[in-house]
Image 1 (cartoon, rainbow, N blue to C red):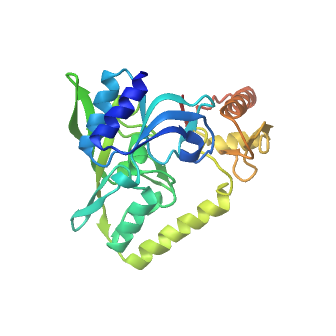
Image 2: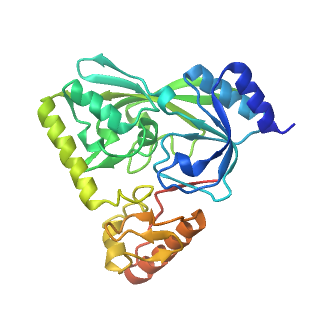
Image 3: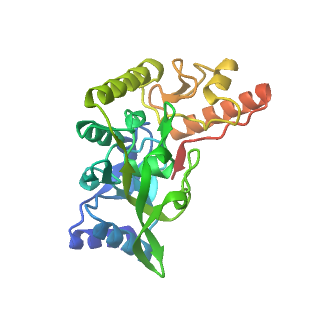
Amino acid sequence: MKNTELLATFLEEKGIAFEQDVTLKDHCTFRIGGSVELLAHPSDEGQIKDVMQKARELSVDTFVLGRGSNILFSDEGFRGLAVHLGKAFSQVWQENEVTLSCQSGIPLSTLCEYAQRQSLTGLEFAYGIPGTVGGAVYMNAGAYGGEMKDVLLSTRHLIRQNGNWEAGAFTGEAMGLSYRRSAYSDRDMVITGATIGLRRGDPNEIRAKMDDYMSRRRSKQPLELPNAGSTFKRPQGNYASALVDQCGLKGLRVGGAMVSEKHAGFVVNAGDATCADVLELIRQVQQTVEKQTGYRLEREIRLIG
């Protein structure tokens, strides 16, 4: 019996919801990717620990999945387990008058809506960012002059220590928040939650600002086509979209992948794009931009599989 089959039996015995042979394109905003052997849906930290521990014991490769908004999955898929922290792991509650805590699977937009209903301001910049809190913490997501670093008080996680997965937390500088990075970047940890500090505000003004940011997104970003958000990180001293546009690359296409004609910083799935199409298009854009401007663009999208 394969190790993933043994893991499936374990999940069933533990009562942890899971699916087998799941198409990953249905679990990412790019709508690209092969299948994953197992997709688990834990509902609490205990179940996450059980899943991660057993997968390690069985030498089954794993990755943690939220809304898949900054991810490019391989055409070959992923041989192993995806741990999905989504609707089953998306609670939010108010700690005090200006502090919220939440689980990492809650969508950022849902958290923004909750804050607005509580008359709390400071999180409006995140409205419309198509990811979960876990993903936003992982990459210190930001927009319109704000970033998670501005509002995060602490983060919670699971970390493997002495052979076991144990709960931990980061506060202050330990969170390691910088441009599109955190203490969790490229580390074997699972973000489970966050505590966010906001300020009292007028709910109507908060809603107006959220609606304004969403309107700007819709007018400037190619939300009508599947994409994974900004394709490239911002190079020091310039903007990736400006460089790509300057080089006349809007509309450049490889297979079903295309540099958006609406926003040069986005590669979009213009129709049945493959991972190979996207990677080749990114390569061509990087090569042209470096040749013409001297800037080497770094990919922001995470490749899995």
